[in-house]
Length: 217
Image 1: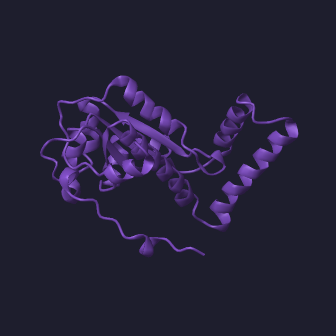
Image 2: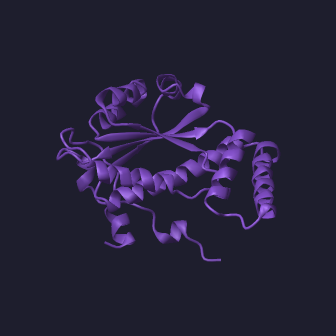
């Protein structure tokens, strides 16, 4: 199946079959796709928290209350759930970790190249922190690239998915100890196989026409 056919048939699942589980090998391939997601200056400012037990999914669903309560079943009935988190800050220790991994993977021909990468990455972080004043927004933008990666890979594997932005951030932060981890939640994604009762599965796709969203310069 080509990428356009995949895009035309992918949709946001509204109800899951709680009896069906994603095979381990298939789910591991989704996690590897996430790990390989590209990001600006390879900053990788994310952490993916995976819930695959009923107890773990319940901890997440507890943050889906009040006006977000309609999303709880999508978490509880799914096979797996991933909470996409973004770092609250980028410190020198994390920048050094990135640099060490770059070196281990053979990305520097010499010490000068390594220093150039260090200087460049530090410069971008300081630019977004001090001049733009929106370091967290820039980092979260990278996290949403990972979301796109997962949704595409899931469709390729025949797995249904639901990105969920409606949740109580304070409750989820507390439930998953995100403050202690230096993270904040960006989006929840439920994964599994749709229920026969999923009304959205039979609705036609609706997108704005190219004339509304594409302009050739």
